[in-house]
Amino acid sequence: WKYGSNRDFLTFVYNLGVRNLNAGNPTKAREIFKLLLKLNPSDEQDVSEILVDTLFELKDYDSIIEVAENYDKDRNPSMIFNEILSLYIIGKLDKATALISNLNSENMRVYLQLEKENSFFQDEAHKYVPFNSLQNKFLYYWENFGEYWSSAEGALEFLKSNVPTDIFEIPEKDGDSD
Image (cartoon, rainbow, N blue to C red):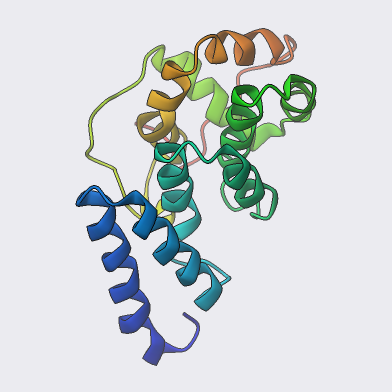
């Protein structure tokens, strides 16, 4: 991506992955997105986000954990929630609880958006939008991944019951408001 001459090709590969995903072929989309991450490991296109969504559709929770563990969590504070949910689903509750107990202030902004909205959105308006182009990245997470939390019985309750109770309201930064 850092070489301008590669951007058209990388954009083409990204769009090919999205087309496969939209055409109901998440297995092929997964392979394309993994290839794209090899071609562009700095991930300026936010392929990791759409790859994780694809992996949730495929119920490939071990791969979600792998992506989340290798992802720069400072760049996208919501990625840790994908890891927590995957650990919950495969029954590794101790590891999920440990991650929850170590949430930082940016992670808590994602969590507080859940509390603020008190519901999930099934609107597809933000689906497959590059994460770095969004104004409210915290709301985006719940709009796009909330369905997976809702469908995993007891997952939301598990998350809420393990988030530290001494949370304070974290002030909004410019560009994060609705």
